[in-house]
Length: 360
Image 1 (cartoon, helix red, strand yellow):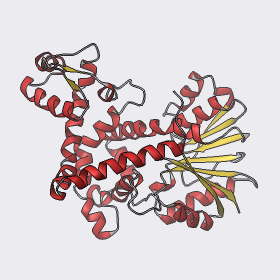
Image 2 (image 1 turned 180 degrees about the horizontal axis):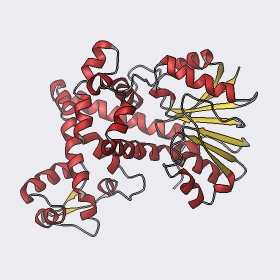
Image 3 (image 1 turned 90 degrees about the horizontal axis):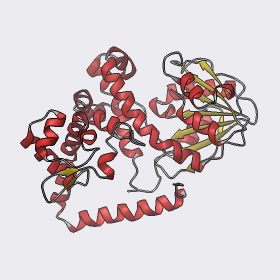
């Protein structure tokens, strides 16, 4: 089904946010705040359901708590209490006979669901993730990321040292990233470029989508882990191998030349100013006149009190790596210092935007 235009999505979001705020205003302020505080426990309930693979167990039809417990290896009474809570929040459906059934929200916890949320649910409830957040106040106090102090290494080094958690983290990030591809493709016309370079592209899901939607475009997929991340296999599977070159490229090293557009998706936001400028200047050195830089990032709204997921992700970046989500004005300043000119910010039907810049 085609995605609605960004302006329609923003209007719907505005109505939804307004209703949520009205509901909170109608309740006593302490009760509304209490509901927000308890959100952490709901995250743990979702984590338990994801870990137990409850959605998979319900795929073939409703089950009683006892039958469901047998399927997932849990205690019947405690599982029933978990399911009762999640059903009351619309995640599953509780029938009059006491059985539990899958519904659209619960189906999003299926690992093979389109835009599956299982990976992010497992990450959000993981003990290491919770330990990281237990030190968040230190980041607020000091202005420095607390994870390196807690772990004795950077977040990226920690993922390599703890590969099991690294896999959980990457699957969670992949689940979030998968929700952004279609909005980006719907909102931005890539067909005007001859060659698109996706820098530090991971497996290349976005570039794959660009090439599929724009048959006249060629691609260069650059990433430090192309030998192991399945990029070449994905391109071959989609029949795009002859239109896309796969190269190894380091984040802070030389950037492949020859592109008309350079895509950096959720790269710049990971880094404080100094490192972000270094990355952007390296890209600038590889670009030819008339080229375009396309940063795929959540842009923080300028409007005071505006609800936007960028504000929550911003705190996560503060905690882990010392990065930040930026406003359009902050991107304009950063890009100018790196030798670019901010041309426009293109909103998408999702939370992500395209920050387009030209060479100065």
